[in-house]
Length: 222
Image 1: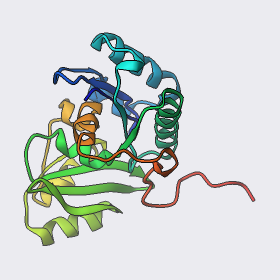
Image 2 (image 1 turned 30 degrees about the vertical axis):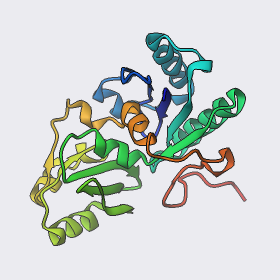
Image 3 (image 1 turned 135 degrees about the vertical axis):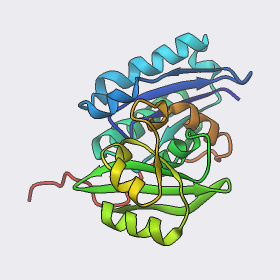
Image 4 (image 1 turned 90 degrees about the vertical axis):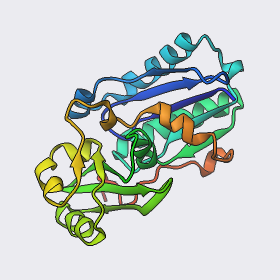
């Protein structure tokens, strides 16, 4: 199976083609991109086109499209999911949704893995993964609530993601280990979105929606 995967849950857009022969062709920025201003609308499709060009595949060679559905930044998720749905619909390709936290954890290379995405508002999207699956279901919490849960759990996970970078001392004080700031494991990589999607069933386009967990930051004026 040849998959196109993408993720826009953080400020960093990532795209990847995982070919049926196992070769992966990924477009992903360095971890420093996580601290920059999001530019999903201008960066996503060039990343998709670049990954497909690198892989030497056309739309007719793809078997499915995989997309990270969050949790994460409201605007980024809307752009990523809408793009994936648009591409899948236009090309008549199956669509497979993947948790962005699960993809982040899959890239850490060890367990227990604590995936943390900055939720703004002084909160974090978090998920703990161990023994090949979620030990905690994804949730949103303040740093203090997360520390309390970590101490009660007793595990010493590796933490990564943009949500871990500004809380290194707090997390390490609670027993977690935080990956170095310049480590690529802080990115939600489309490669791992593709790999996880291999075990996800095809999903109707209108059922693939962002997993916000909480109400979005932006609300309509009344």
